[in-house]
Image (cartoon, rainbow, N blue to C red):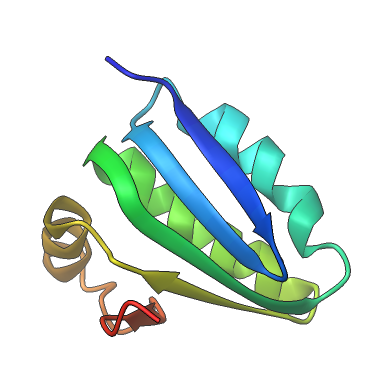
Length: 103
């Protein structure tokens, strides 16, 4: 199992890579929270996510909540099929700001 990292590519562009599961999301939450402190616009590219479960989806919802509370805008790009299915099953797909254009 691979770990997971949130990589800051600058100018509000972030990449999430690795496995999103119960063993990785706590550290990722702590890593992501300070990035949303000052508001702004952020885009997290999820194309590097190797595998994810419901804990990964919970992380995305938590980050979204933190960002909104601090006046930041957050968008997810390249959502893996596993997270898309979990979001649909959980009736959360309309809550997540997902882009499919890759931009």
